[in-house]
Length: 254
Image 1 (cartoon, rainbow, N blue to C red):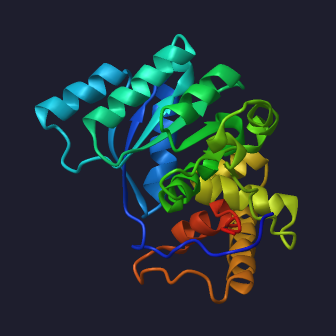
Image 2: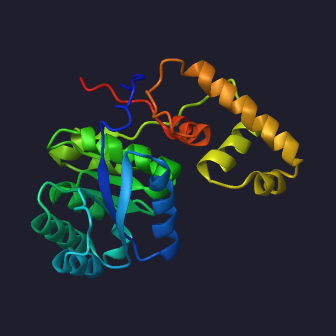
């Protein structure tokens, strides 16, 4: 059962993240979403697992990663994914390994759970909420496991204790007070990072209308979160809006 809860505030979670994905655009999209969130910092982007291990051996990291995101589909088989995860654990102690996948693969899901990964998430389920998902992973118990909703059926059919106890990545905050157009404008501006002129072009409206939508969105967010996370004084409203919009409800820990 899910219940509303607050994620720990800025500074309570500090994650150094390495991204391993053969898709250039995926690597940079993940980096862009994590860069907005002050709880996550990308310390390296790599096309291949070997590049990550080379960086470790050469001391190229200015900060040791404590989270690694890997694309499960880059492994040719489930056994290759298992070996990749085990090799990462051997290289870095207390590492949180998060597998992202473009489609459901029960064998890879089982391999991830069995080899000690902390999460297996479908990219379509996660998207802009990747930073929140990593923060959720950091709060799991040692044997905890996080999956996204699209994997529920596959997890239920697999006889593995971690999958039977797995947490589900929650749904985005609905913000029912926002009209679809206001939500589209604030998501394009604060989440996708588009300039206001580009938002106007995307929505086929005037820039002044975009600015009005953004102001309305800020007011709605402030009204709905009067006692929300204490944000640093130097944090821009655009960044606060990003964190509020991409935050999810926190699962009941019972």
